[in-house]
Length: 181
Ligand SMILES: Nc1ncnc2c1[nH]c(=O)n2[C@H]1C[C@H](O)[C@@H](COP(=O)(O)OP(=O)(O)OP(=O)(O)O)O1
Image (cartoon, rainbow, N blue to C red):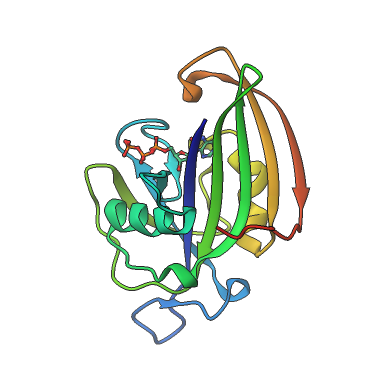
């Protein structure tokens, strides 16, 4: 089983008379989310949050910080990540990937592209779900509203996961995580 992370930085778009966007004080104020267009690997060409697989003995929180920095250059204090979800992706009845989802309104730097990803700020009401994993439209809107989710998503048809058929899902909202990563 692969253990992976996704991270969704959120900010407030510039108001009248302001030239720059600001990190939001909390999720309810945020109206833009940083997505990436993936340039390689699983989900190549699709939009997603920055993230990827855990390496060595790092924690999910450390992984989300490292992947966000590697992919788009933002710096995040691990303590500023809020655990928002636990997603289990099944392929042909077996757990393929367990994914920890984080969001944050506190980060430093400006996003820049990398070999792995092209970053793009998008309005939380304009997320391009037709260019994302099919399951994202089921859970990401709630995560961007500040809710928590435990979800199970079943795919069928063999590897690779991003070419398999999405067949079933089960969602539980507003849960407290026993382990916040
Ligand atoms: N079904 C679904 N919906 C939404 N997001 C995902 C899935 N399946 C997934 O695997 N994912 C996410 C989980 C991870 O964040 C990425 C996949 O990670 P990947 O790009 O393979 O990991 P990296 O460590 O960045 O890869 P390399 O650096 O080794 O290329 O997609």
